[in-house]
Image (cartoon, rainbow, N blue to C red):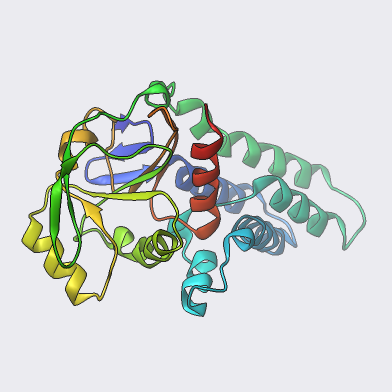
Length: 260
């Protein structure tokens, strides 16, 4: 077991800190909340936390199914825990208009356990790293382009064709690329022909940089997809492990643009 910048590494499994928080919180609540209404409160908490985080990123220019996946695909992360917990506590209080000591103890224990990933997470040295100026070739479904350093002032997404979560977020990234957003995809460890065939087979028009293995090590990337927010000066100012929702992508784009 290793502690990475983006999550807990368990052999081939890379569990993001957000996912670990969710898992610990749900398991703890189900273990200690032995009273009527506990399951309802959990459901209300998860629904409100998910919707509060996902709704701002929904986009009318994307297919309805893609917007729906932003909400139901929990691999994409994105939880507004404060509104969710407030709604869950209200759901507990409402039927009897009071809290029992057992309820208060269950809430306190769950909050403490769910906060553990924040304590386990290593100090974010990688957040201050700079994007290496290594020239990489660029590839579209139609042609290859000469090597150049990655542009700054946007997001950089590391992906591979064999990665299911990577494929899940590609339609979102393609849509936002077409809208002119500064989104750089970087393929790691695959040949030009493999990626070109994949793009053609899936009718994707996005462009991707190749040879990302030259950058993934220095940037501390241990799982895919990993998306970085990079400031105009090339500093890494934000990270996300796992597929992105529209709201998460916009948050990283805003972070990259606002950072000095």
